[in-house]
Image (tube, rainbow, N blue to C red):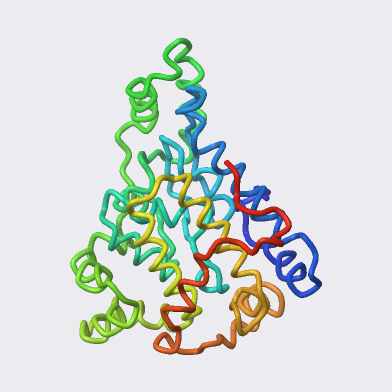
Length: 313
């Protein structure tokens, strides 16, 4: 939920694991309902002319990303902490993000880096990646709302909306002291423009920088299956519509909802969100043991006896 500091933080996912283990409908319904809602919000402007302005004034992860990341305007503040950490729980950056990460203004290699590593981004990095469109200090957000409400007939005018946000922000710029993208863009491009996960690892190993070492450590913590499935999805969805990507992600979500050794999601949720020992036992445990056939299985059409069938948008 969106209580307090965070817009969604994983409690709902624990129920998905229980559903897989008990064989109930939660895994089927949870992702279906979430994706339908996210797609409705993402297409509100083209369907109904309603322009959404999202305020990333705190932690934005998982479900909160799905509700807001496809908005035409996204405002980051000094409190923004954005991440898609799904590979750490044996999932993939879903809610349409395999599509969004494939076409970031900063380049697909940045999308691959963020999708595979789940790196946490502050406002400066969100803007550099092209995930956020504007920066505004948190204390000036009431002024943003005031100016937006005052647009009246121009409420659907993109330039007027952008101007209102810019006016409220008053020339403020985000602190870039902890930014990761700008100082490491060249290394990210060298390593993450690679076609395979093994190649990404090999290139990071040859970089010999603190950034490369930290990134390697982060990758090695993650589900090897998730890393490969995520890389494949971002690659496939470069040429897809958002609707096609959501349909594919629903298939992927359902194939993730199988116990090991078929998928790592239950084990990842156990390690990170249930027992919180942060010591998942991935199966397979090494990238090179995740076969092409295994990866492709996550993109297969749903079984004929699936309770809901393919996602209908």
